[in-house]
Image 1 (tube, one colour):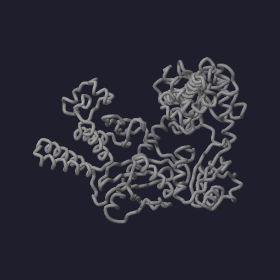
Image 2: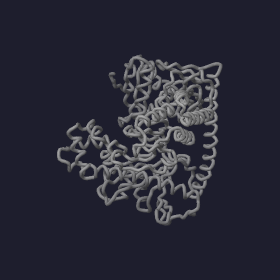
Image 3: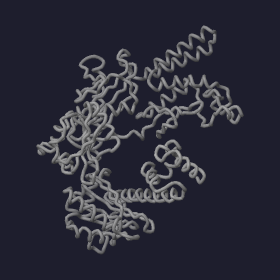
Image 4: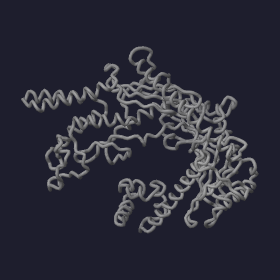
Length: 599
């Protein structure tokens, strides 16, 4: 696929074909990725009829300096490419689906006599993952069912054939309680154990009927062989499975496997509820909120949501039900908007969940904003500000004896962190540990840029420091002509005193006051953010010096490693194969040998 570059003046040269377009600003930063059936028509629409666009869209268009286009064969191919580019680059103006890294998974480990363990860390080398589970109770219910049906080991011993043969391990209490068959002492054959694991995999994929069929066959075989105890065990397992299945909402076994999506939205956000149907029963649900950043249509958003959810939850359903028609054909996937019957009921259930979630979020936000407004009003009164400080920015420096000096700026809007507005600064013009000059530099850089980009200035600037830092900031503000337009204060750490420019005496706000606690929260967040960058820079410098000491590892190799792995911890934990993908087999073996020898 050929990538072509254009400027906003060249949009008449764009091809009227399906493809993906990318907008870059003057810093050559990717700010938006979009797809279109007709790239020329879609991109041109951003630069015409600007009054019809929202303020956010007009701001984005004002930043565009370069346009890249990739032509593809179909709109579906464009959707796939757009989805991958957004996940990889996370552009500022694109809607980003919330990452599920904090949700737990169930992992069947890749080892002899595998274990089934809950974990929040995903490492493909460890095993096969199922999830993520947004409902912890549902996950532990499945774990309890697995434990009831299949006695697996819970120990983390290395049960290699050699270790078991040498008798290195002894059975634990779990064996005596009947929860484990003792593979650590060779009391259970590997083939028998792996049969149980295969059934657990079916269960975790939602194929309960296949597990029940297997248990029925074993029960009949045991009964015919007059092994009545074994037959009774199979029957008890069948009863447990049936009880578990009853707790799932069974719609109609005839509908089979489906993915159901219900979407509702307003000007600010879209709310999507997802139901995963296995054998006619709801096996999994999740509802998410997607903050809108531009004027996205629901029919354009939903295809990307469908692709993301199906990928995350490993869906194999060949039919998707929605309450909205899609703007694009999803290739071989059948997408329908049902009008009657059980499928219609499923869609209405998803829509009902989405509406409830929307209402719940609205009430929660209203309560939070009401509380935040009271605190901001107190802050306005305590600091004697002319306007309510809805937009606050706070600066902090970080260095260790002058090494790796950095600064950070955090932004709070409506009393909440606006993390997309946070900024890190590498100190460029100051040599040595000079906090005053460093603070002056970053404030000058921050607001010179805001003015040049015609963006709103904050309602309040907070400086982590006393009179010295505040005086340096005032000088910087005067130099760029904003002193007097934006109120600025300094907060000294020891006594939490508030300093004003040109006032020799600080003011003291009650330690219990909500207004002071908000300032402290903002100051502490700026400090945390600055420290995180400083530690990162120090660890990179330490890593570089450690790598430079290895014979055969040159500057270009070090640069490759730093760009890919970021830290010595990640390099040390990487396998030789993973390292070889970046620097070749010979250097990877050399590096691994050195790190293992000196770790």
